[in-house]
Every structure is written in structure tokens, then in C-alpha cells.
Length: 224
Picture 1 (cartoon, rainbow, N blue to C red):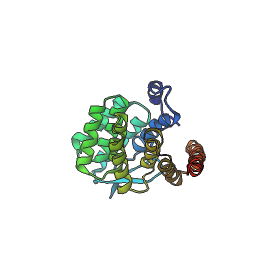
Picture 2: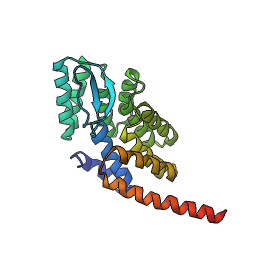
Picture 3: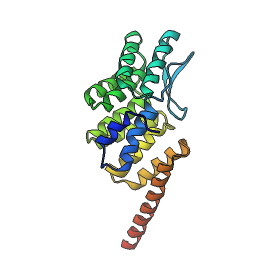
Picture 4: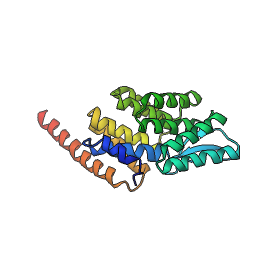
């Protein structure tokens, strides 16, 4: 289900391929507001599928509550309040990468790529292998036309965490729409589908790409 703040994003993306619209939605749902707060005794960021996305430092219970409240507000689409809450959290606990990643998502949704990049860099300084931060870096690079650099960021995310579904999704989109690598796109969509059950839209894309890849192979065989 799309959150309320996607209305503005969808207007900005009107006319773009449906894969890009879904990618914008998935980016926030899976990598941002669906993330849980710090856990005791070992805190973790968790995506919408319940997958651990990166180890986080342990924080006091009262600070954990602050973070959970910020994420709950973010889930409602009130990014202004969520941003304030996340910044307050980081004033008291600046070493939590997931909070920086969620700030990056908020800044990116507001079109402030410089602030988003700064937040991503802050997360990666704390944890250079943080999958969600690497995924956000890839999204920023893709949006700015740096497709090869974006691919490298996504690949580093899935190297760090092979079952990080969203990075596989984004690799599928990048390979299909920007790099024109249909077979690679199909592989990443299929991996995403293995990790995230019952995504009907991606299942349709897989069926479409399977036909296109087969057709290309038949054409290549005839040409030979």
C-alpha cells in the first residue's frame, strides 16, 4: 500500500515507466519507515519482510522509544515531524546508522539530494558495509545519471547482505531500464521474488522479461 506522501512523488514521476514508480514506493516502504528501532540486547534495522538489514549499536530504552516514535510518524507520511524527531534522536545518539539512512530517505523524497547524500555518508562512516545506506547511495547515484556507480553501490549492498531484497529489486530496475541488460535484470528480479513473496507486479515483470530474453536468444541463434 502506498503511503500518503507518495501522492506528490507520483505526480513528479508521472509518465515514467511503472517500474520506476514502484521503485520509489518500495524504497521508502522497505528501506525507511518500515525499519524498526534499536533492539535490546542487539539492535538491528529490519525491512518490511522482517529481514535484518544491518547490525546497530545498543541504545538506552528511552532513546529506543524516541526512535520508534520517529519511525511511527514517518510511516504516516509526516516527514516534517519525523525529520525533527530523527534529528533529536541523533543529537543524543549520533552513532546509529539506521537513523541517518531514514533521514536520507526523507531528504531524497523532498528532492534535497545534497542533504540525502550527507546523511548516507554519515551512515557509511559508521558502518561502511551497511546495506540500507549502500542501497540509498545507489538510488541517489541512479537519479543523477551515474548508473555504473549506482550498480556498484547496489552490488556492494547485496555482497554485504545477499538476501537484502530491495537492492536486488533496484538492480533489476537499473539493469532493465538503464543498462539494457535484460538477463541480469531477470536474475535480480527473480532473486527479489524469492525473498519477497507474493509481489504480483514483479511476477508480471519476470514473465515479460523471460519472454523478451527468450526472443532475443532465438534472434541471436538465427543470426548465427
